[in-house]
Image 1 (cartoon, rainbow, N blue to C red):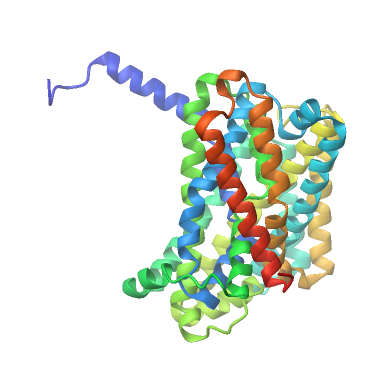
Image 2: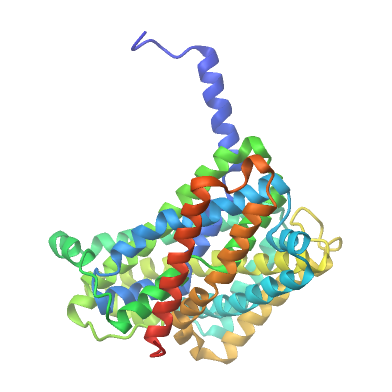
Length: 420
């Protein structure tokens, strides 16, 4: 009857569901926190500066699209037990597997340069030279993977990534005007090439090749089974919502402050953004809050990107790959991860201006969307057990959404470059 206390059986069932969810929870949130990486933060900030709130609606529209893409990786991992590269190799052959691996390699290089540039930028806010901050970051990233298990790496990534929640404080402290926000969000200058270029960058900042590889491999490495599918979907949905709200928070903060006072500002570095925000937040608070958000974004993304490439290359070549294995048992896997971390830190240390590539890297990701989404949908049609394949109305919805997203990303990038 209404108002009656819960029975012991009901309480036990609820507790069992909660334990199952917490056991499954992780891969989706980690990959989504990594999705809001340094390049994405700077892209969102530049969007707010140049266009006010006109790209805000796009951040929200991308939530279901991001979930739709990453849910397919969950489904593929749970029902095949294999990572993305391995599944492409087994389904379409080694040539196509290498094509996907090359795309992953290109995306990995671009991402790592932006992540370590962001970490170096945070250090420089406090007078710490990059020759000090980058080795510290690299050692931390190596230590957490080489001395841990998958679960420990996941917990570390979530703990570091949660620093990104600082961006919500930045948006709140900016005191955006609600009327201007709503009016700007629906004012879309879709014929402007510069607007389309930043729109393409925002799309590329949300759906990246290494996200697909990481989440599918992480779910498979974690050993999730069909009974975990519902919880894994919730993990992915929560992560998709959080990451896009963080992007929206950065955009709002920059639109309400820098965009209102200096819409011609160019934010190509972490220092540029922090210094531009300090008149509104104060130097100490601005540097600390914004710096913590960027540091969390850069560190969690560096872990995810490096692991995604180590997993993806292993799935194509066949070497042992698992965070549950000792480094001596999976030498190539840990070696590739270490090479990514050390090389990324070293290049940024000697070539300091790479952070200016942030928006360009996101546009590059937009150009790779047809390859990434094409493989993902093809696998969901061919490699899954029949009962769980994409089919019927939902298949055509996914194909349509993917096609429109790819077209917007590619057309926007070409328009901004003056090629169409």
